[in-house]
Length: 354
Image (cartoon, rainbow, N blue to C red; front, side, top):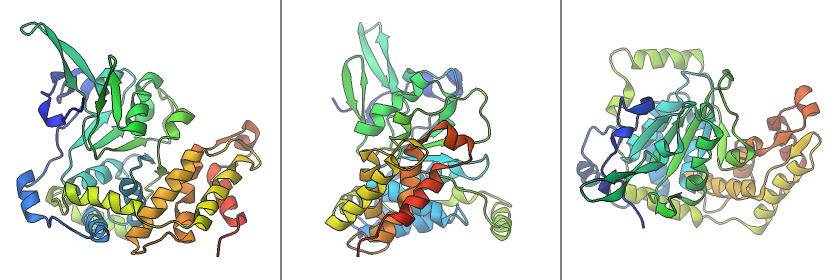
């Protein structure tokens, strides 16, 4: 039975200040009501214009991050999920919030901690003495955009609670399957410099993320402009929805219509297969990597105004789509080899279709 988030009473467990300090906002802060957003947003936008509007809106907040926004939207439009691994204060949370505000979507942020339980994310059945029956109270996963902040701080048991949701857009609780929203997008973050009290994501969990990338530090002149922009208020406070949910769903349908030639499909497969036999690789990328790379390349082609995928789109996304799925053997790790370097070498070595 499909459960709509609005129809389920929120559990006190997930409110601000509740148990374990979880913060789950039912809907992202919107300067206007949802009805006003739908009234002022054109009901039918060309898919490329939808992507361009979102890009321009997010760039008002995330300055100097055009490449990261481009990758985020490639995963978002193709139905994948994103893992952001970067230092504190680089704008990971702000990026996810800006995207949610730009499309008027429900946004939920969960701070992952060692004592977080799967039920804190998925939901819990509570006994109603008056009705003498159990009622399911939905957890913060029943949303459109879920920010899993510092996901590697939670135990493997809690991390695995996201596996079914990310792969199948549903969760199973007490033998009952609950469908998630049609638009469900996970942005997970982790800090690469703090390893005490963390649980590295297992290979099966890493494979569920379509893309992994870092935001990085912006140039000094851009950082100065960020200071100037936030002297009196944060730019995110002025962000309003520029497209509707209908536009987003139409966008995702349009991405699937972007043509991928047989030669390009073989090129994608050859790139991924080459990682499985590369020196120093203990575990290469799976066929799921091939699918994610093809779909993300379709979204990128649409953003660039093409009706078909080019080899350049595949090459641009090869590292963020494939590298995080690979496992190096101990000798390669100790010698300083990285999965990113191996994928770069694979892209140079595999012939490009003409």
